[in-house]
Image 1: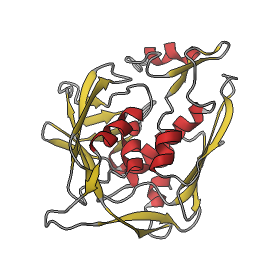
Image 2 (image 1 turned 180 degrees about the vertical axis):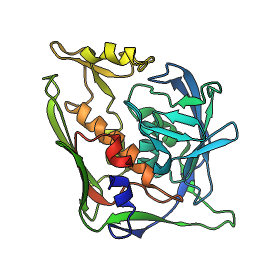
Image 3 (image 1 turned 30 degrees about the horizontal axis):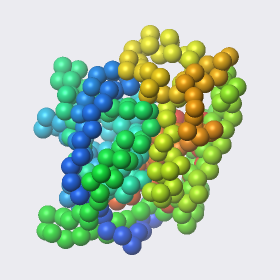
Image 4 (image 1 turned 120 degrees about the vertical axis):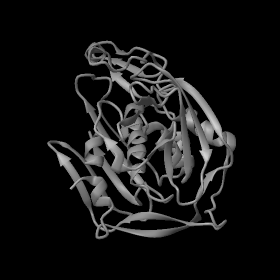
Length: 301
């Protein structure tokens, strides 16, 4: 069983009130930037949405809910797809929205490639900092439904351990009164990265914005040619990723944290787990989530 399906199981998870009301943005906010893989510039507008609508992408009268049902396996990013349309690299934006408590949001995308039926969320500096700043720019407000009523926000609480694994990689969730994430990575081909672990304190918006959101995506220099030959990272540069050479270490220091690569994997994981959310409720499970060398198919499939 996949992690996402297990975490939606009524046996494994209980949906409980959070004691707070569902929220949305207090106004629209817009950002423009280049996609990491497509290299194309797009404009993303985050807009308020009614309670229980959740988060979804909107473009040219088409919409794709930010839900695991529409997740598609893709290389080096999280992709949502519906009716032949797809949106790539959604994980940083969704991570920031989940952590900030933007439960309901219409995400409008301009400059959508109609010929390719494809769009990509801007990468900015490779972290979630720009999206955190965008949310802070307009702030939050309580969301109301079409009848003008508030809706209490629910959260999934893990009742028993659940995991998915393959070889030495895994993601697991254990019962906990608060959200914690422990993540491990191992890059023996790049000794300056090596094996790293990072464990968050109880995760809230402050912890996220100061300890997770600033962490940038990273890559191994010796793998860049292969990725380019595969049609990826057309928009990649030293301005939107930290690059590590197996023999020469970091090519564009300084790092924001000594364990920045590991923290960035937590950023991605929060974005992926946000896809469990339904109807404006919390997606991130109330659990101690432990992952090692985990990748998207463990969460989605």
